[in-house]
Image 1 (cartoon, rainbow, N blue to C red):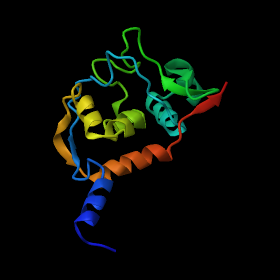
Image 2 (cartoon, one colour; image 1 turned 180 degrees about the vertical axis):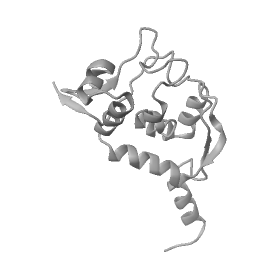
Image 3 (cartoon, one colour; image 1 turned 90 degrees about the vertical axis):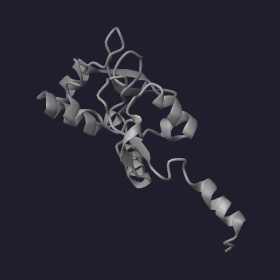
Image 4 (cartoon, rainbow, N blue to C red; image 1 turned 90 degrees about the horizontal axis):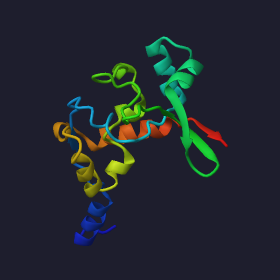
Length: 159
């Protein structure tokens, strides 16, 4: 195994751009919860936690606050509804279910799409004042969030 410059560059190129961590602290500005259409995909655990938070039955949460949206070919995914002006269904001067919010919300901005490259991260930071400031989250911490997301499969149905 070589330990020369070529080896150093090869190893460096394997590291994600966030290998030294990323700064983020939520400012509770609600920019990620409002104004633009988007989907908050849910796992069974997310619905369980929402049901407990809202003191509702599992199926009642789905009927009241969720919708099925196109996923891959021949499937749909369960997502939270949004209002006519694209606010999250739970936004009321802030998140009304903050402690019980879905994992997708908890893991923002440490989503694979935003971690794909420094450019993707910087593009996301243009609309989120909490990105690139605040607490330094380590590479390991960021990858734990990613792993946790992968460990909670989304609710999908065949159509």
